[in-house]
Image (tube, rainbow, N blue to C red; front, side, top):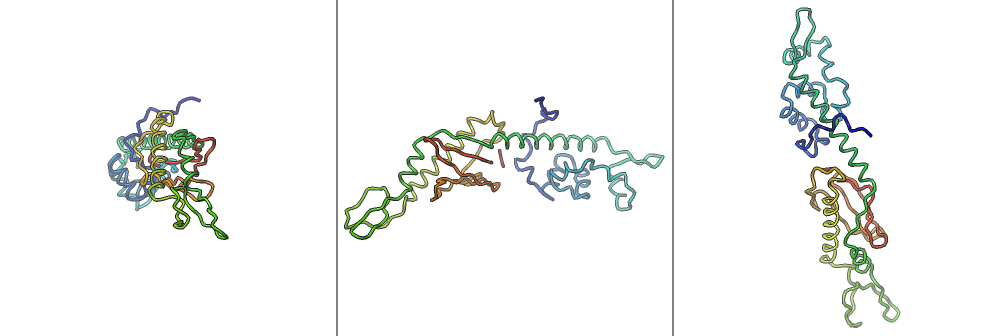
Length: 247
C-alpha cells in the first residue's frame, strides 16, 4: 500500500485530545495555530470540531454568497476586486489548507492505531493468572452440618474460623499494580510497531484495572469509555479491543 500523501506532516505538536475539542476549546486552538480570522470563519459556520471541519468540503465557499451578514467577514478575509468578485487573502487560504492536511493526517494515524489494537496479546508476568485464581476463588470449609467460605490465606484453628473476603485490599492492589505495569511496559516495548506518540500512561488517569468476581477475571476501562476484558489462556493474558484516546 502506498504511503499517505499527508504522511510527511508532523502531528506531534497537536493536543493529544484534539479530536475531542469542541466549540470554544476548538476555536482557541485554531486561533493559536491559524489565527483569529480563520477561527472567526469557522465559528460563524459552526465548524466546532475537527470532524465538522473535515466534513465541510470548502469552508471558504460561504464567502461567495451574497448576504449582509457576511459583509464584515468578507472585509476581514478578502479583497473585493473592481468587477465585484472577491479574492481570499493568500495567508488565510494557506492556513486553511495546512489545517485540512494536518487534521486528515491525524485522523489517518488514529485509524491505523485503532486497527492495530483490535487484537492485543500481553504475554508477561505469567504468574499473575495463578495469583488471581488462587486468591480470588474462595474455598469452602465444611464444619459439621454447615459450611463457610474461607480465603486461601493461612487457616486458623476450626474454633476461630470466620467468614473472610476472597482477597484482601493489599493483595488486590498488588495484582492490579502488576497488571497495570504489564500493560504499560507492553505498550512501551511496541511503541514503534503501533506508531504511538505518547507512551506516558498512568493507571487511574488513562485507564483503570478492575478485578471482577466473575469468570472474566480482569476488566480494563479506558478513559474514552471503552471496556475490555482480559482473559487467560495457558498463562497468557489475552486482551481484545483495547483502546487508549491519548496514544
